[in-house]
Image (tube, rainbow, N blue to C red; front, side, top):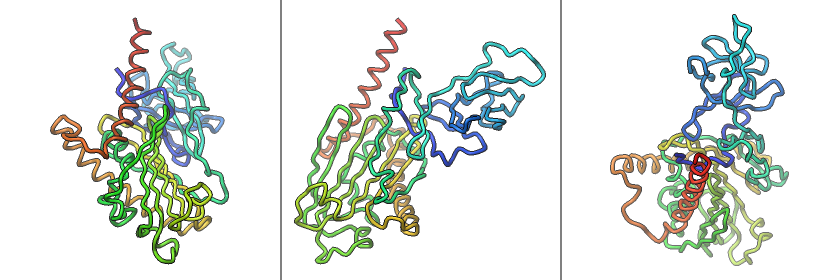
Length: 349
């Protein structure tokens, strides 16, 4: 029985990670190897040679095919064996499962479910990715030793920033601000506004807001089952809340792409888009450091939470009002898993 939604696109690797050597990665608790085929496109196979079950990621890429590092059996991008050293006949079972791959936004996305349902139109949309008026930081990656549902809850929780991220994006004024929520069939958003409040430490490094008062919006979007977008708006206090005015201040769109590795670990890919200091590479590198620090702060909390969950066998012991949006997000994921398992049982029957 599946424990993760499978019929969805997951971030597998940044395109820059996949060069001349194969890349092994565990995704949805399955071993996967990524490499570039003869046409230069990324391919994904089960990371297991069908002969002696040695990981193919221990092998090499030869002329766009993946050669096992044990006996040299070689597999094409479609998973079919194309060569066995020392023999002409290729057994019919000398084949490896291949997974659909799509490349977009500088990333390789993998479909772990039913291959015929892998529609590139279902890939997430990232506005402003190619907008020359927006700067971007890509290739962000961390390994988080925690169930990805813990990370989903964290990313849907605007209230934790005050306490966890005191030196980066936190703002003491946000501690008692109420969280509002909206939901559709595809995503959920938790948000709060901090009217006429002090800018965060990071905001003050970027822009002079005169009297020091800003209206700050924090919008935490989650597109089930694995894409988070945090939209932080810092605008002069008192302006009408329109999209045009949002962009008159500072606008930060921080994306996280969560790919379960196992039940207790997650691949945490991240990307950041901004409407200020465009083209400033030095600023981008400085920001990269700030975000790495911020996400490490989250990682420490998630890891401690996972250790307690492993020990006690429960996710939490009491609920709070701020749990509303994270709880709904988790129920949406749970529904996806149940529906897929029910469909699989019907087919099997």
